Amino acid sequence: MMDSFTHYFKSSRSPGNRSGSPGRWLLICVLGLLASYSALAQSTAEIAQVRFERSDEDVFLTAEVHFDLPPVVEDALLKGIPMVFVMSADTLRERWYWYDKKITTTERYFRLAYQPLTRRWRLNLSSGPAAANTVGLALNQSYDELAQALSAIKRISKWKIAAVADFESSVKYRAELRFRLDLTQLPRPFQIGTLGQTDWDISASAVLPFSLEIVK
Image (cartoon, rainbow, N blue to C red; front, side):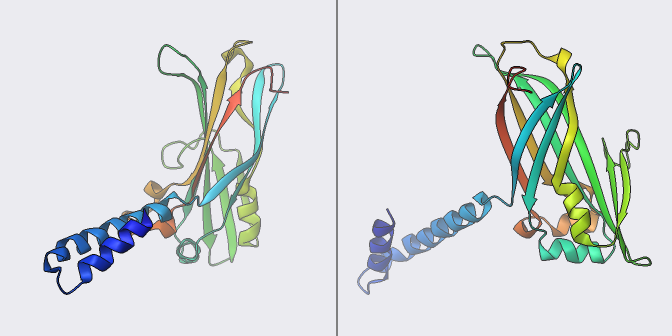
């Protein structure tokens, strides 16, 4: 297909083909869109080493999130703009005759902020946005280095995502995991400035089979 594009492009540039100009610009637009799509399709993060565990009553998730902090995000942090990362876990029951049924939804919010006076990093962990829900705060920790704070965000250890009673044995389920930098938590001017800027895109997702039989 690329050979055909190249041949068409060369033909449209020939002196005798004056009518090829619109086609040439159309081709340039198409190639530009393909390049943009390719850039957007590249994963900016990865959810790896996922493991489910269970107790008599609860189901827990352990995983690692791999990502690099873009310079533009780090620069905003150093200027005192907090960043909120969100990890979510949904479990769904598979149904061949209808849409899959969502069984549980769980979220974890990581609010990372730099404190210039102390030159330390503050990490707050909660089950919802700080402005809307401070109940369920599980972690409020300070770190000397940014790398230490990011390590705490990237490691998900024995996070309760559901109750055993929510599931039936011998029934097929799947778990949908998502991680993202929540741009809606940024100040309004920053939200506008990030529109269309892929440097601000930190996101990953994973879909895995799930059942009580494979949860150890």
